[in-house]
Image (cartoon, rainbow, N blue to C red; front, side, top):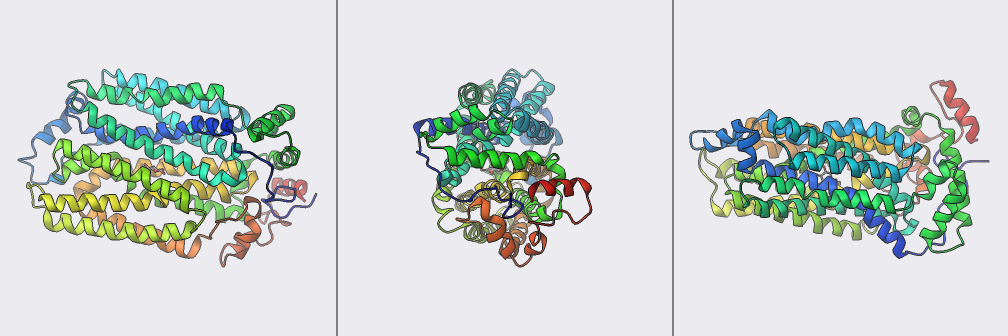
Length: 522
Ligand code: BGC
């Protein structure tokens, strides 16, 4: 059987299969996407909770003391600089990294549905440990459980959504995951705003309410179907066909079924997906995935998302005002993600990323200037400057939300060839978590040392990533996944050198395994 390229499933490729947008498929996707809700809730909750005095008093007495000594402290940027507090936020991401490798295995061998169930169970255990925490150890173990859940959920959910969705709404459904992340963050901000006034156990309520999305995912993953791709990949052909009919709302699924069988056969012939990922022909996809994830975190978004309340307090806002400000940024985040859902297939990925780069750069520079000139030592910001800073933070968040937020999940998922798509997804999640960890762990110390210059630091990165997009990121709008090699990679001035002969010559480094593998393809 000939192949059109290393990524191309055998078949005509890019054709429209008969598929109705059934209530069943929509409900299934909403349930599955709640994995994103948990991720977002967790990102959002830690910042708010860590600015709560009762929690600080109980678990981080040093930070609490420092915070109250602000009058004597002549460097207000340093009042939250504490490795323990940072570990509380960032432990989540390091543990998730390890979990991702297990999740990659369970996703492939057991299926997407059980992987989501595992995620749900981890979430529930983590929430219980956190809400009932008696000491720092219990609090941190609870968070480690949560991140394992994030590792499993972020591996399985985007894959699940892409596989279950009818082709023509696949992009929209992919961003549904990110939309859930942003709703989770906003929900967390709202909860923090409410529970802050409940003394002395409001923080327990904040952490405990995460039980709602956690249960939703757990119960949801019991009731949803497995994806036809996963069933067929594991040899359950009949079951796969039954599910396909159910989710497509028609009996006329033979064409799609055959293509799935063929695609699974090719994918199954790759015995070492991770090793395959390192081959020269996959270099462009890999470089782009790693860079996009790295850059996403170096926009500085999570400095805002995790530490918004802490940040706003550091900048001189009062307790209530700072939570209020982070509720506003949370809302901007959600609404701007919806903008992305509508525009991504019209204006394209590159336009969104480049426009957003400009917007983020300008807003960060303005924030740095305002802080540099307007904030005197141990004094608070004037009201006018404070308002402009919140506006600039919103400008920054909105740009992120319609560009780097959803697109660094979307682009890797649509550019990897089928045979390395799931391994590619693991790399996506891993790199995301590593750099989320780096930012979470370093941010408060960086704020202490760089002061307002932290915003110039991120602005410089925005400049670098925009240049990267300009020269190295090809446009993938409206290109069928199966035709990426021909229409995208082989047309690109640089990447064409890597994928040029990929249809026939599989391996240029003499790897015997790859030659056998290639033999099966041609
Ligand atoms: C990122 C998270 C971030 C969130 C903000 C996601 O795409 O991976 O790190 O907190 O967007 O909305």
